[in-house]
Length: 237
Image (cartoon, rainbow, N blue to C red; front, side, top):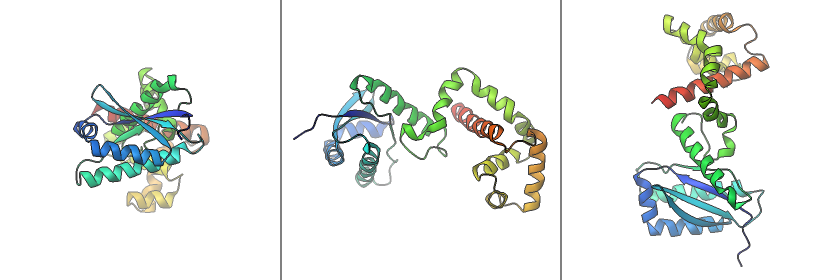
């Protein structure tokens, strides 16, 4: 007995040849349907402007929809790999969960955003789920308003200029130093430099960015400015 769906979420595949293939591959679609059914979703396949959308209607409780969808999506990736070994990986984004069906467009937009960010900042996006983008969700909106450029200019320009003029590595050092939570040992080993070289660079960074660069408010701004810079660079290509 089919329970009434409690909500829905959109899974959007990257627009390219592989998708016409998915849509035209009945065996693949039937398999997808049964994989999702086992995970508690009823699958509706929808073609929209050359893109394939999977609309997943949740037939179980809301609390664990994400774990279930993740497992099903992984199974589908494996199935696709078996079907087309050695070809491009299947690339998709999963939007926000909607409890009301009339909000499905929001989920679609969110899934599109995931695919865009995956393309622009591949090294930062580890998850296909919109809800795992956290701060990165702000990027497109802030780019529109010109705020991203302002952040980069205000917080990173001295470092970027210094690197240009001295063929330096301060930006990269700052980035790793922030990613390792300010661990000098980790940073030096990831950059393959000796401690002494690192201390020299950190002194330089403090001189350019202020002594408070690792204190909460400023540190958050620097971390965000680095994401902004990566996003802007990625959008240029």
